[in-house]
Image (cartoon, rainbow, N blue to C red; front, side):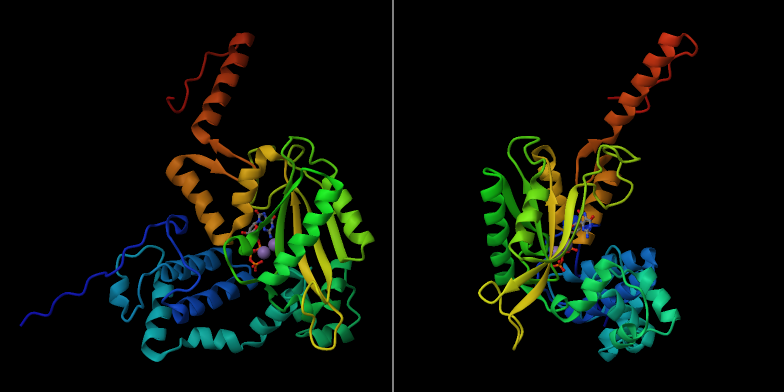
Length: 365
Ligand code: 8DG
Ligand code: MN
Ligand code: MN
């Protein structure tokens, strides 16, 4: 009797942005294992490996049923040798030794706690670990100098590491809405980030602010921030100006996925009534991101700030590789058009100087 050959039971498109992925899915133990390894790679600044694990986790989240054998995964995209090994272990033993070792390692836990402080990145955390600082108590006892953000992060550590609820997000939306419409009638507030994706909790609350008339959004951030501050709603804020037009790489050529909108990283102080503070407290601290965009770039900003980070990354990769387009939180460009425009400009310049013969266009229109 011939055994029926097991083939791949699932099909999944290559790019995460081409898949429908639900909040609750069928393979949490597999995706959690891969996500932990992704997190560890990020904490060790191994971005290549981190993205590989994130992509693998995303494939598992998109599957329509529970995986019971690795053979079901044959032919699926983004599952490298390493990820498959992890999956195999979890399917066989319920856990993977690499994941367990990482989860309990002193370095991983120290990096997690220290980078969990608002304002502390992996470089700083790594330096502190080399100085023998592994936890908050050791940091507090050391004479380490903290910048303003890190000091606020340490002061409000417990609150900021409590998940923000949908109710908190709604109540902050109301506050920001009130500020914006009393100061700038007609200006719009849009809740974005994880809450726009339908998540029930988040690590912060993200907003886009704009005005339906181009240019009328100017001055909005300063006014809103001053108003919030005057109401005693801010524990911390750092505002940075829009640097899109003056940036070194210029419009449409963002050097990274950090955008160049005017933004404010803030810590709000929410009192009872606006949130449920921890037992025995009168208020709690919540991280809020405010971003101002001109209406002409609003659609791209909304897409870019809705997340998730992997979805955004995949959408940009898909645009670039499959559509020859360049997507950022500011704009969408057809790269062939941009190249042809450049060639045309070079030719105009060359011909008018009579020094060189025209170059041909790289891509026919
Ligand atoms: P969470 O807060 O619920 O934990 O998750 P999230 O809402 O998805 O993450 P986030 O860290 O608040 O970021 C929201 C989205 O904003 C994310 O998909 C990436 C996008 N984003 C930009 N530009 C920038 C930027 O300069 N910094 C950060 N942190 N995010 C940015 O488009
Ligand atoms: Mn968020
Ligand atoms: Mn955010």
